[in-house]
Each structure stands twice: as C-alpha cells, then as structure tokens.
Image (cartoon, rainbow, N blue to C red; front, side):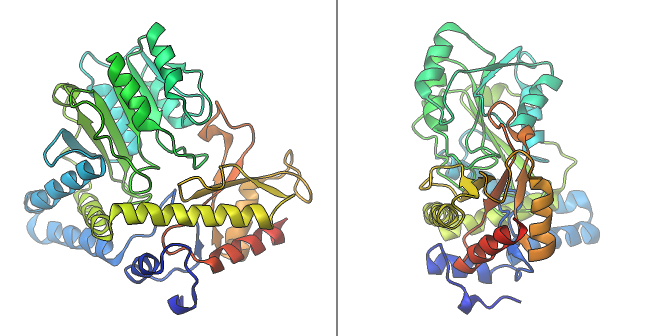
Length: 383
C-alpha cells in the first residue's frame, strides 16, 4: 500500500493529496491516464449503487430515478465547453468511437461524402470514416494545426465536415481546436471535435464561437475524468443540434453514466482550471526529467513545456536501436518486471504522422517524483 506522506507531488500538494486520498491505493506505478485513469471511491460507489438499485427496483425504474443526476451531468459537460446550462444538446453514448459513429449516421441528409482532417488524425477515426463510406481528405497543415491552413483549404474545397482531434492519442500536443472551429464557422462548414484526450485535461471552452456555429464535440468518460469505461458523450450546438437524429440509445449502461456524473461532479468541485494547471505541471515536470535523464537513449516528442500531462518518448540510439527495438515487448517488461504502467503507441494510432512506434507516459494529479524515478530506473533496466 502507498504512503502518501512519502510522496513528493508534481502537481500542487493539495490537489495531489485530494486526488490520492479519494481513490483506492495504487498497486503499481500508474502512468496510463490517457488510456484509463483511476476512478475514485465516489465514482465506484455511484456506479455500484445504481447497479444495485436496478436489481432491487428494476432497470427502467432505476433509470427514471437517475434522470436528474444525468441532467446535471449534461450541464457539467456544457460548462466545460463554455456553453450555458441547457444550451445545445448533450447525449450519452457507449464510447467516444460510438459517439462519432452516431454523429455521422445522425447527420441531416445522411453520412457525408467527404470529411477533412489533419495529417496527424487518430487512425481509428479515419478508419471509421472509411467504413461508413466517407472519403477522408487531408488538409496540408503542420503538426501543430495552423488555422490559416484550414482557411485556405475551405476557400477552395467544401467538405461535408471538418474533423479535428483536440489532443492526439500518439502525442500530447494541445491543438488550437477552438481556432480551427472558428475558421470552419466562418466558412459555414460543420466541425466535429474529438475531445477524448482533451476533456477534463486541457481547456475545451468554445464560448467564443458564434451561437449559430454548427459544432459537435465528443469524448469519453474513462480517460482524464477518471470515470467508468463504456461511457461516452456527444454535445452539439448551433442549428445542427436540432437537426441531428437522436444520438442517445435508451438501452445502455446507465450505471456507468451515473458514474460519469460522479466523476464530472468531482472535477467541478476540484476546479477545472486548477486541474488543468496541475496536469500541465505534471506533464512539464515529467518531460523535462525524461529529457535530462535519458538523453542519448530516448527523445521526448512533445515540446517540453506543452500544457498537457502526456509525455511521449521514442528510442534514439545508444543501447536502444530505433529500428529494431520492440516497444510493445518493452512496455510489457516495464509492467511485469518493474510494476510501471505505460502505453505502447503503434503507428496505427496516427499513420499519417507517425513513422515509428513510441511509448506514452500519462500520469495524473497524484503522480509524484518517486513515480518518475521508478520510470527512469525501469527504462534504464530494460534497455
């Protein structure tokens, strides 16, 4: 079991302590929040309590009783988008991927013919577009998206929609999604924003957009909000919000939605701005430490002061040959031999941008200096 008093937090001490004491003790060095963060006791209890109520009173009776809790959760989603209470439409889905699928299938006029995106788009998103018969079109823009590049593109081409991933799955760069959305609004083109890695992590306010801008934002519960798996959301504003087909399926994991509501309430109570600042501080500290300690063997992909909690590293040489190192096996050794949990990021996550696999490190507010010590020692050991 952990001993919190022995930890040196990277986030502000009060936030780190609050995050740590409100959830079960860790059994390993958890640096994988970008995949699935650690749920709190309150989230676990809310999810379990609803499941028990379903057994005691029936699923539909329990769902009706949970309606006010879920309505408040919808307003918490709106608040993180900078929208007024009751503004736009918020639907719960089974996952972020399911949310994107439901949005594409629910667009007025049917699935669009084309969708524009950046070269670094999340690979499974592009694959889903193709499966649904949408032709992806790549916008010529740098890794950090250039809103002017989208403006030039839209001046000569009118896709069915523009899809933007706010923070990638393969690298922790925070994209200027709101600025790109503003360009799309000015051009009268709907924009769909993937906030799976951004929601509860970075600033996702869209309040500067015109009220009549057609924008859809979708995301998931299990990552930075630390809610249950198997729950996602889609939020729409502008005329499109009233023209989309219903996105929310009645047959669903309602207990998971109640757990997401608890996670959103905790996020609200901690203070979203404070959480964002704390996570950025964690990521900056981790990246600087890894760059200094592993120079010559690993390189950090992000800018060191990127305002996200994700640090991505890949081999550069020395004892690790970038061409032959099996990062999936290395990640498995980190977990099995050293109790350090990270993510293997294969090139399929962003085939338009990645050339080699990488290792993703994503702590949360409770990440401490000792966790980075353990990671550095483990990376040296497996190399």
